[in-house]
Image (cartoon, rainbow, N blue to C red; front, side):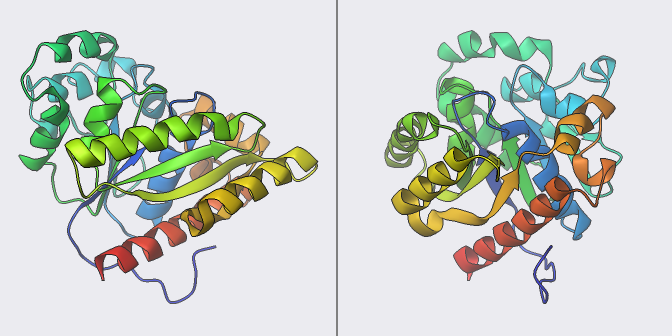
Length: 269
């Protein structure tokens, strides 16, 4: 659970990109449930669904017919971000949903000047009074993810506890370093969260140990377990914390939220 003595306080908006170019690592699940856990401790949170699949929007119960104004229109400056924001059933948690239009955004962005800064500039022009903005990146390192990394203060990396987990993360780390050097000197990895951990599987623990040996204290202490309730929740259009507060997955995401806030406070101290 959230550590004792942790109380929210007002501060400037912090933008975190949740990124991993490998699909199926629990990225969107982490976005939805981390955002819900932050909102539960009275942080005001905005999710930017920048994945054309729109799973974060679906997982928060946003109907497809309520996505006419979405992250695509915000990205190409056809709409202000405030026009695209939708409230969710979670108090304090809003979302800019994804739409089918976003699938063509990569091609459209190529021809634009300062194309890497499209998201950053629109968020700076007015994203409301939020404590946190969480950007759900697509499972690729194209221009959508580049825009998220340029707009973000830090990156949170979900990493699946499986054999090939470390293979792809080196490419992501290299991309982050290039973005930091060329566009966003403030960018850093806020943390790496181990997901889909199976305590019955020795391989999961071996992978977890390898990741901690390599990245040290960049890896959160909280580990997200494999949990059937976490898998079921999106089909009901709800975060697992709302779907089943007492399951192991919910408790893990609440703990993760506590770690994220503690790290953010150390960064801003």
